[in-house]
Amino acid sequence: MRDHALLHVNGVPCQVRGREAFMMLADWLRKTKGLPGTKIVCAEGDCGACTVLRACETPGVEAGSAPRFDAMNSCIALLAQMDGAHVVTVEGMQAGEELAPAQEAMRRCHGSQCGFCTPGFVMAISGMLEQHGPGPVDARCARNHLTGNLCRCTGSAPIVEAACTVRVSERHAVRPRYATAAALAASRAAQAESMLVEHDGFRFFAPVTLREACTFAAEHPDLRVVGAGTDLGVPVNKGRPMARSMLSLHLIPEVHESRLTRSAVQVGARVPLSQLRHLCDEAVPEFARFLDLFASPQIKNVATLVGNIATGSPIGDTLPFLLVAGGTVHVASRPGGKGPVQRRAIPMTDLYRGYRQLSLQPGEIITHVTFERTAPQQTVRLFKVSQRKDLDISTVSAAYAVTWQGKRGRGPRQIVEARVAYGGVAATPIRLAEVEQALVGAFDAARAEQVAELIARSIQPLSDVRGTAAYRSVLAANLFRQFAGEVLHG
Ligand SMILES: Cc1cc2nc3c(=O)[nH]c(=O)nc-3n(C[C@H](O)[C@H](O)[C@H](O)COP(=O)(O)OP(=O)(O)OC[C@H]3O[C@@H](n4cnc5c(N)ncnc54)[C@H](O)[C@@H]3O)c2cc1C
Ligand code: FES
Ligand code: FES
Image (cartoon, rainbow, N blue to C red; front, side):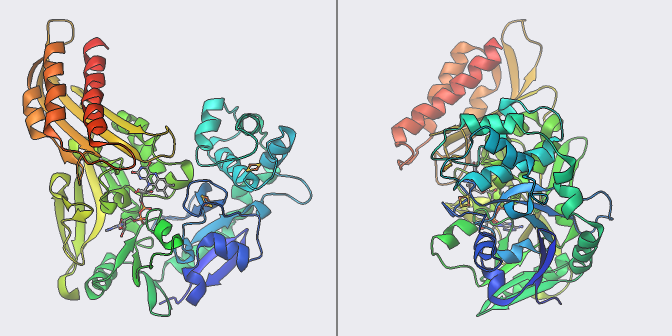
């Protein structure tokens, strides 16, 4: 059993154990490693000042092409979670005296004034280059990659210009410089062994088998499973107590798997949302488009679908979709820490018991999620209303999936099955059974209006800082009117 996490920082191997393993990566880089280029401003994943690049190999996958470097926020990730990671900070970007392409572009376009946000932008642009390759970058692509970064001085125009005009340089390419054969081999060797780091009554366990994970979960009732920690890390930075026992599944091969079958999508507990977005591109295009509105690249490159589900927030963005797409959560456990691993499946419609309460039994771990692919005779539409378009939490979200009979243009089309779900209108995300029944049959403008009014009557939202109950009711009905307008008028 390893008593340390192994990560590489700018190519240098670092073993972290004890107290250090429970520090946030950004704090550790600045205070312990003497790498103050990584800045900390919000400490909650919102501003991008702490952006670094990270690559990780997938356990169990044969050594092949080197893993990709993606941007992530280092302020909300515990060092123990970085086990197996190859981290590159802004200090690692220059080649000798020569500035990295993103640094040079920021200088040329006057993208920096006080400079506090600049390292984060440099790393976000560098992450974009790693994904995008050498072709020209348009403003839309640049803006998408910069949604997770804030600048208080320049306005965004010079920075977007820097991202659009950055020139790729082979000399600075991150992958060949930092994902070297020696570094990858060292990570792979460490990943073959389970890890337990401990300090002052806190323990962080990362086993290599699901059986060990389930045993640990059975023996530690106060356990927190840690995914990417994007939800768990923020309260820790705000002074809330950290869980005493943490379990990470990152060394278990099966939770990294994602696959498409003829009718379904399967997503392992450690698959990041950015990978899921690509998987869904053709199989569930509306969900793929919707994920573009979810958080920032820095969050999506690490955050998981399972984390979004298990947080149980009534405004979790993926939940209305999963409710209308036949989402099912698959769990594993080893009751009493004895016998074989037991598995069961919980339909999303049975998962939420109350505000942030899940119907998981103590010791149950989510291994993966499945949901349906969009069928050719189906229309699926997803909506999110938030106070700003990017990097914001929903006020209300909605998901509609209807199955049609008959073709367009020959009188009202018939709906043979309808599924309707909302987030942000109750203590949990909900399906509206009465509304679904009312939708079955011929669908025209008059029916659409009746259904919109029924939606407003069927929900009892709460008022909070994001909107009053009355506003949410109007919003829920109007989102349906928008959906109806789109399907009736194209
Ligand atoms: C800046 C920022 C922006 C965000 N934007 C959005 C947004 O636009 N929309 C949105 O919906 N959310 C958003 N979030 C919330 C969060 O990022 C998502 O909910 C994310 O999907 C959580 O995934 P994670 O892997 O980081 O979960 P973690 O933080 O690791 O875990 C979240 C919860 O899930 C539990 N859990 C994780 N894995 C398992 C498992 N295998 N079995 C059982 N329980 C498990 C954990 O114990 C914890 O309770 C945002 C967060 C931040 C910091
Ligand atoms: S410091 Fe703001 S995202 Fe990390
Ligand atoms: S240059 Fe000052 S915050 Fe961006």
